[in-house]
Every structure is written in C-alpha cells, then in structure tokens.
Length: 111
Image 1: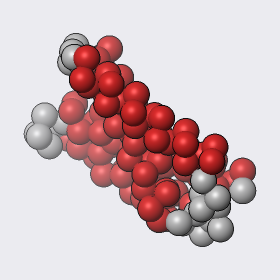
Image 2 (image 1 turned 120 degrees about the horizontal axis):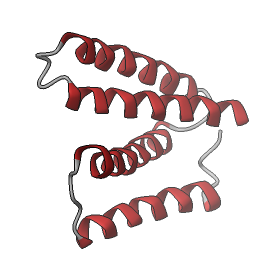
Image 3 (image 1 turned 90 degrees about the vertical axis):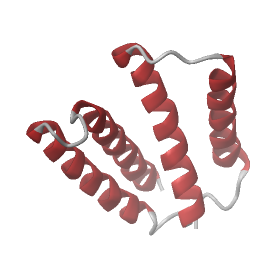
Image 4 (image 1 turned 45 degrees about the horizontal axis):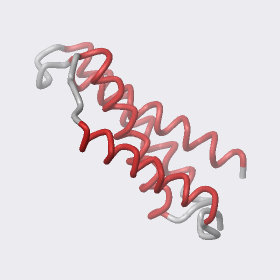
C-alpha cells in the first residue's frame, strides 16, 4: 500500500508543477511552459491511474485535488503574490482537515 501513496504523491507533485506552468504559460502563448503543462498532466494522470488499482476513485480524487488546491494556493501566495483572505485560509484548512479525516479514519481509503 505504500506504493499507492508514493504514486499518489508523484501524481500530486506533477499536477502542481503543471498548474504552476499553466500560470507561467500566459494562456499557452509561451512554448516551454505550455509543453511542461501537457507533460506534467500526462504524468499526473498516469500515476493517478496507477493509484486507482489500490484506492477508490472518489478517495483518490479528493486527496489529489484537495492537496493540489492547497499547494497551488500556497505557491500562488509566495511565488506570484496572490494574497489570500481569512475565508480562503479557513477553506484551505477545512480541505486539509477533510484529507486528514479520510486518511486517518476512513476504511474505504484502501481496497
């Protein structure tokens, strides 16, 4: 099962890189960041598909998208100066809480 979590971490990392590259691509008008978007998302979906051998799609997608949201919001704050207000911080905290609840308490996280 550790392999499933490794694959999920790779999928989340690739999705995060792809989304940051999407910002840098300036609506696909810059070639190298645009290529990085496509390659990163292919890697992300490939590894997410591998995780689906071990975990249900709803759980995988919740963790993948939730952590992706938190990572991108954090990168946007520090790298792009995109400020977050109190409701945004509360929402991100709730997303993290939901992921922790799934991971720590759900028996449906693994097949």
